[in-house]
Image 1 (cartoon, rainbow, N blue to C red):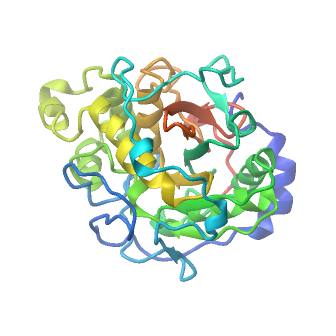
Image 2: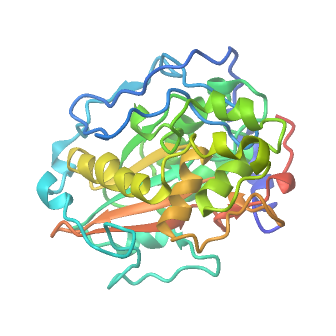
Length: 355
């Protein structure tokens, strides 16, 4: 199996003691509010609930998943780690087909893999210290126990996140933010552990998974749960192909999503770039597949295969996402990235850890 290979199984046995199972029910929907001093999207309100992970809906909890969660002020823990990037320069627009930023590495010494992804470790090493980076990625491998926000990482997931952290070792501390799910927070913590640092993880709804939806994810789940599940329809939306069951639900589904390209540009510019002056030089923002799948497809201009609606049913892998890079002149680049060996997965081939 190409993804989630057995190389993690040995390490996972040792990490197993680190996993605990949360208990509780999915909480009610809440309106995602950007933290103080962090710029939010100026468009229509974001959807009210957190997305499904591969098959079922999970709502945003009204409180942080952990009492130790940090309330986001949008200000890095240490101002000495911040590069002098002004908000005005960070918003510099570039005309690049449907994009307002560059989508190739330019002068950076980076080569994509055969699937079109760039390795996160390579990106970190190639980007000069005068530039800032924000990685927006899916969480690591998580439990399949339907505990909603309380579902955390599996032993393999812990090992995967720590292995990614080892590729990002450097002489600086990172800024970490996640949604209010245990698994996204734990991903940040284990990436940090792999780097040799302790993460102060900020909980931020700005990266909640429903950004591309015009409705709460519960509405989408209710409509498609018996027709193949969310991934198939999110992928069809992302690639601009006709929805399955078009005659019965196609017209409704078409109103459930924002236009991909304008919304994707808005996310990069208004949610990420506009907030980067408040973060450290390198940021790790951990979210969910429902956000990351459309982002990768968007940034790659639909050239990467994450088509969960056709065989072999590729879906966004754990720890895959995008890197947003802003140089000292304010020029913005966004690239599809992976934290694991490959950027895609086939959900039916996941290693069953029994949790």
